[in-house]
Image 1 (cartoon, helix red, strand yellow):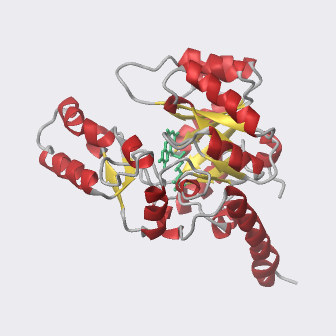
Image 2 (cartoon, helix red, strand yellow):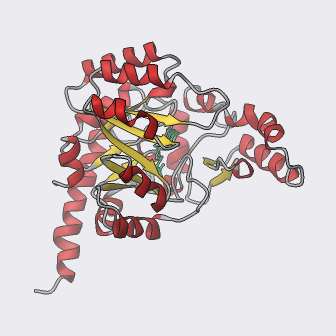
Length: 328
Ligand SMILES: Cc1cc2nc3c(=O)[nH]c(=O)nc-3n(C[C@H](O)[C@H](O)[C@H](O)COP(=O)(O)O)c2cc1C
């Protein structure tokens, strides 16, 4: 399947694995890219720019297909050394960067100078238009159903994607709630040129997370995610567990107390410990990002099995089901 996204990134299938903190290591990234999609390393999971350089080198050893690096501009008191992370990206020969969080305008000249294609993740049409205006090559349009940070507008993809299609000139992929061939075909119908998946890629054989997490995703229904950190305007969609119940109780009791810093300090250990879930398999230890799409995850295939099945079934939907509705 050729789309503006497969052409832009020189990939076989219009399927991207979005950056994921404590998940986006080279094992998963190389598996996705080797299967013809676009794998993306998560820069800030690497403790230092030097570690990122090593991870990029490791990934080059595991695939000769294109892969990218995610750079998330998180709200924090003290920024990570972004310039040094970008240096590691450029020196590592990376040609695709997924940016997310704050507007990447400040870093665009460095990235463009190095001939890097930038896809910015946005949760609204206005941010997507801003990304287009500052020279991003593509946008990942992330609907309210997504795992991780859905923003504060709460517009689901049924509206957000066709709105993006009305306004954007650069190509975009649908992100949030994407899991299978139906997702891909509907994304294309909404005007996207492919899809970005996060949660679905965690439940794959190659994802370097604990088996407990993969099994939990297979069992979870679409009703089991919750939104935390809304009072901090840093909303995160997570899978419910003991830590999340605790966060929600703290937040509810904090409603009349207008001190976001105090709230953050109180919930910090519960929202900052996802590594203990993802790496160690302690499912109740902390909040961890997860999309409503958990309800559509029923197995733990390899990345190649997942992507091949999606592409084959998408072809069947387009050429059989949809064709049968077209005028002769
Ligand atoms: C465990 C997890 C960690 C994530 N970490 C990041 C991150 O560090 N940076 C980022 O830009 N997006 C992050 N995301 C968001 C994904 O890249 C992607 O946009 C999102 O998962 C899409 O929604 P889906 O989960 O419904 O597929 C994360 C998502 C998950 C599930």
